[in-house]
Amino acid sequence: MKLSAQHLVRPEIAAMGAYHVADASGLIKLDAMENPYRLPQPLRAELGQALADALINRYPDPHGGGLKQQLKNAFAIPAAAEVLLGNGSDEIITLVAQALARPGAVMLAAEPSFVMYKMNALFSRLEYVGVPLKADFTLDLPAMLAAIERHQPAVVFLSYPNNPTGNRFPREDVLAVLDAAPGLVVVDEAYQAFADDSFMDLAGRVDNLLVMRTLSKLGLAGIRLGYAAGSPDWIAELDKVRPPYNVNVLTQAAAKVALKHMDVFDAQASELRRERARLAEALAQWPACTVFPSEANFLTVRVPDAPDLFDYLRQQGILIKNLHGAHPLLAHCLRFTVGSPDENSAVLAALNAYFE
Ligand code: PMP
Image (cartoon, protein in one colour):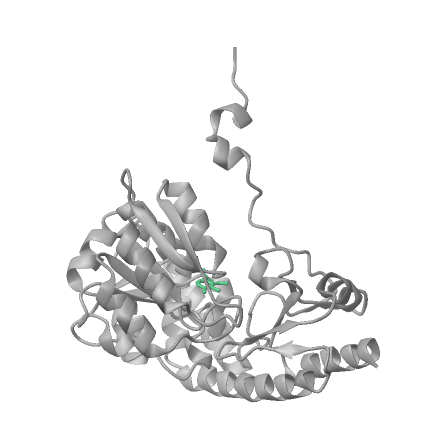
């Protein structure tokens, strides 16, 4: 007798849904924190040449040595730190969970935060402990410290700034977590390009700190490159669970071209910050909208009826993210990725018609 897939997978996997990606065809896509801009034409031509020259008959450089050096230079990674590469930072979360999984090991995170932390805890059978943020999405530091004391987590994940709330926790609070945590603390800086602070200066200097970043939000979501910087001891252990060729030849080649042109991405990030401010100010004019502070390339907003406004915007050709139902603290919240000026103006025009 054959057993069905549903019977053979673990019950907790059988019970869950796959990561949902909404169909955005024909819509203004503001649901996934992507950069709205394509590469400028000359850079596209340079990229085309680099991809044509790439040796795809060979396996990729397993250590990505040249790419790591370029990342160190481009993002001021301290000399004391080592770098780990991932197929997106999603994969780095997976590697951390895999390396630390053993009976009784705990992953701790503030909640709501990036859902892949909890999902990877489940996949790797780590115990997961979520510590709720306060109602205004600020970190509940006493509760975090008490949970660390009680659960002695092997790893703590903090998103800095936090997704899906957009705010950045106070630096002192993260330092207090680093100080109290017995294990690894991953500071996930996916949105660093849009934020006013970073922990990169401490990578390799504070032993239990891993600073995780991605090129995705900068404008390279399609190539899937994430990286983490930390102390050589931690990186060496995490590297043992990494599949040998996890960053493919085309991704390495594309990233090497892109990193030579950081000025392009910096200029786009500055424009998105300006647009974020314009959007936040305009949204705040409607008394029905509560706009939460953001240091990311998205704005989280509470409205009277989030499902209704989400559906209305989709009818108007605009796809955002409905956070209502994802976590009790996110009741009637919507997340707007900051788009191009035209896209943001389309959002504001649609909201004007909805609220007026
Ligand atoms: N961390 C956070 C906080 C995120 O929001 C995301 C993407 N939404 C990621 C990590 C993963 O990004 P990627 O796999 O594209 O690097």
